[in-house]
Length: 158
Image (cartoon, rainbow, N blue to C red; front, side):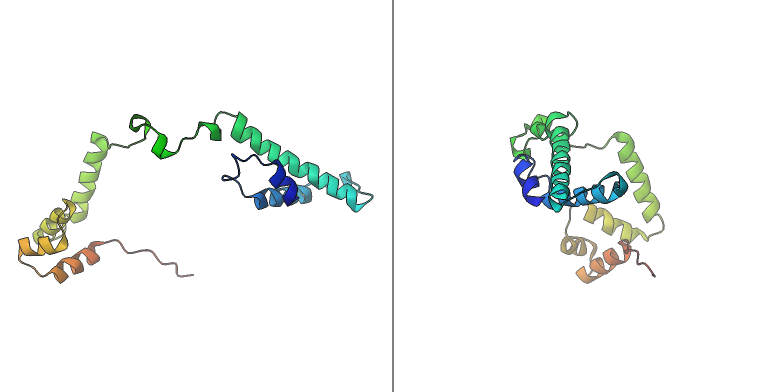
C-alpha cells in the first residue's frame, strides 16, 4: 500500500502529507467497514481491494488540495516571494490597545510605585541593568521582581 500511495501522491503534495498517514487511513477505513459486505477468496483480492482504497484516499486528497479552492496548494506562496503589501500584519485596533492598557493597570494596581516604574521602563525597551542604574537598584533586584511578577505555569496534580 505504501508503494501505491507514494506512486500516486502528487509531488506538490508530498511536503504536506506523510505517506504513512494514508496507509493508516486505509486500514482505519477497512476496519470501519462492515466485513460481512466483503468476501475475499484470496489474498490477492484483499490486496486489490486495499490498493483501490489507497488510490481513492490519495485521489480524494489530490482533489481537495489541487483542484479545490479553499486548500489549494497552488495558491500558496513562500513568504519571501510574497509582496509586502500582501503579507498579513496585525496592527492592534484602538479598542485592543485600550483593553490591553486597562488589563496592565488592573494587574499592577496593587504593586508598589517603584515596581510599576521598573516594569514601565522594562516594557519601553530598557534592559535590566539600565533600569537598575536609573532606579539606583541592584540588577538582581530587578530580576527577582520580574520573576515574582511573571505568571507561573499551572501544574496538574494528577
